[in-house]
Image (cartoon, rainbow, N blue to C red; front, top):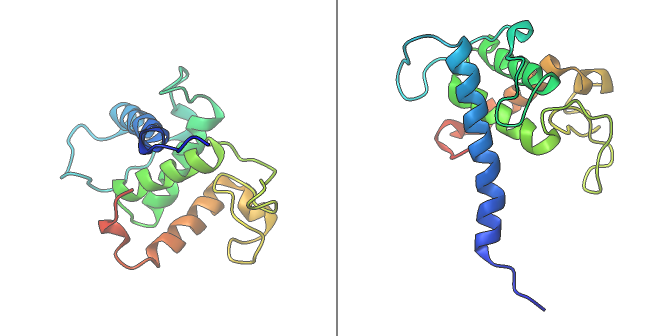
Length: 153
């Protein structure tokens, strides 16, 4: 039996990180402030109706609109760009930035952008299927993690 190497795992982890960096950078360059306030800076709102029409790092249409909803949910809670990046990265990994109406083997009852479970912690099915509500619930849970700001994405 072949032994699985660390290089394959590193590639699987690195590709989404590169994609999210490009996605967020593209959105922020187009819609963000002209000056960057510090390494991360405050979160910025994005008009979901004004996302780029062309693909950004392979994401387009509904996916970019959902990224805007995620960024806006973090901004509404007063969270910074680091939180926005974590939120978009999480949704990229969980659903490819799509509101999915199905789970998987690990979570057959998971739904939405963040594949949130039907365990009462993430709201109703309608909440989990709503990009803004599900993102808000994600960020509220993130804020309860001690020291989340210092953790690597």
